[in-house]
Length: 363
Image (cartoon, rainbow, N blue to C red; front, side):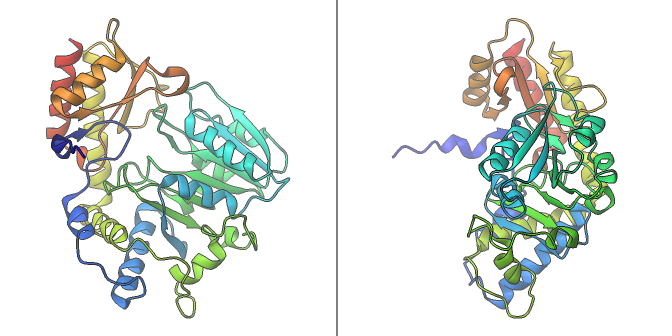
């Protein structure tokens, strides 16, 4: 076995896992305790409280699902979508398309509202796509395109439909107010702006959604009817599956760090570092990809300067400078870069280091 010891010092400047807060890494390395130990259950309850704060909700059913953001997405669909249900899904990138795939596998009648990549979701088109959908689903911050969409206006006019939102790249980076926006079901990921190692999916569902939850979803592992008896503490804690104890400890510590800094300060740090990153890239000849006025503040998507070889430049950044940036996906593969400042990476020193390396490679 060959282990790359240099990898530990790499600076992740792409849309993948952000550099974890030191406190969360330390917490994840502590000696194990049982998943039914009262100490752990108290940590789980406190973690859920922290998630409510960063997700802008009072929902009792708020907890970290044992799996990455994709597990959160699947849980959001399998617990509410039955064969034949009409599901309206906004697609303006990879993750909206993944929603369609999950809903289709569940036998839903998928009404896909397609947009050009780089454009925000059209509120009017989303709301007029079907007269009576069971669910309307949207991606708040589309990681593949760098676009931030207006989910609040969709939620305010959703009618009887349940409103399901992907918040993987937005929670912890920009204000997220799920209750105020009329969002019924939402999920996120730990590895983006929360700055914690990947492996958990913050998840929440309100009472309106819980009343419509399927009695027997096709997934046993993600069946919230059983999981909620463990995470909400209703009566005795009902064992469903062994929780990833130290991953939750890491999230607990990461959330504590964020809340101690203050959400407004965290949002401003992401905004200012993202703005410096955007300005620096533009000065090097990159051109914006995401629609102006709807760009994710902390994730810049940009066309490469003329003459820059995508794969070669990113490989040089990784091998010579220890810096990883994300390439384009789907129709923009090889054409754009996705460069971010999220979590602990959203610090001026990291942005300056990243820009210096990118300057050396593309100039």
